[in-house]
Image (tube, rainbow, N blue to C red; front, side):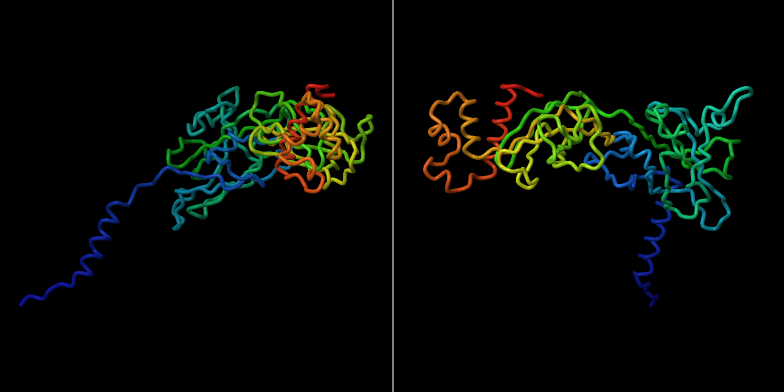
Length: 358
């Protein structure tokens, strides 16, 4: 009787054979942005987010690192192939020069090469891992540093060549990748802010004066200043370096924010200067808006002012209708904070009708 083969070895052999047959050839080098300084990847999940979210003047000056994780790197663990990274600048624009082509990397008689090697890059060197993490810094990327001449979008080529600086042959498609970085040194235009008043939560409103994409705003309150002109807030000037914003608003291009006047230590009846800046996609901050006045008013004073602006002659019925509270008990119980937000917005609108921005 013939001996039966155990099925397990046959199954393993079949799986191994299939795996070997399906083993792909060298794939195109790919990469992902891991981090840029303290900034995270945008919610959109854009791969090349340093173009979608450009680097600002402050970030370039800080020279924070750009780190990339590279996959499918041409790495040979046996050492028979010596491959190293080189960084080349292909110029500005959406595509730049094609630095994969050797002729673009070689100087032509009487001129210079179309592509320039970024010899200052500290991350180059021999590949020692199949998934290396490459680190770049803005001041290594831009030949002109962080000045106005460098503003714009640049295309960079990372080449895996047989020896560092080799420019004699074209680079294979599987041995290079490109990435683009935009440098935005222009801050957005300052907004226009209106006077604001309220009891505890004071809603500060403003108008954005730019068509570019904004990513947030900062509200600055000078609690030691006054509305007669004595303030560290100066319209058209940068935000004072020692003054932290009272509120930072995000979520795109906000046009209002609620300031907790009590937390800032403002007394009832106290009026202080307020100004607003806006942020663009590169985190550039605008100069200060016009300087308006933020006033903390008592509840009764707020209702008198609000009802007058609404053209109401009966303050008691006006207060009852808008607050949803009985007149007799209004002083005995606190108005919900959400209501004060609504009332503050209405009061700010009324203030704009009365005088607009200062």
